[in-house]
Length: 77
Image (tube, rainbow, N blue to C red; front, side, top):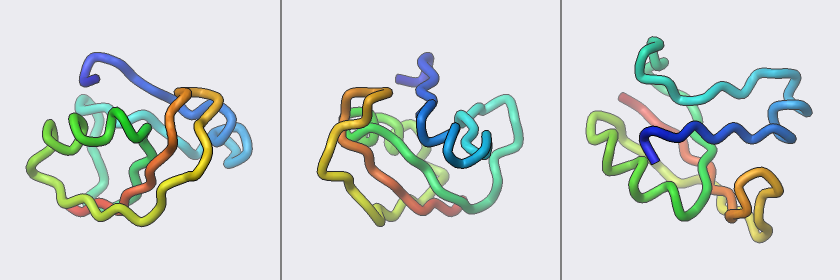
């Protein structure tokens, strides 16, 4: 997953372009929220051992963008 960028287009639209892809070349805030597909979450979390992730929501339905159930995490570096 690290070489793919998933953007939740519908969510980004309704949040007025405030959703951004996690990009290691940019400065990642010390804390924030991560939205990720349920199948991509375990690999993403393993790839970022310097962050602590706390799952705060899992959707009951699949995203039209990723075709996966969506998980929302709070993270801290």
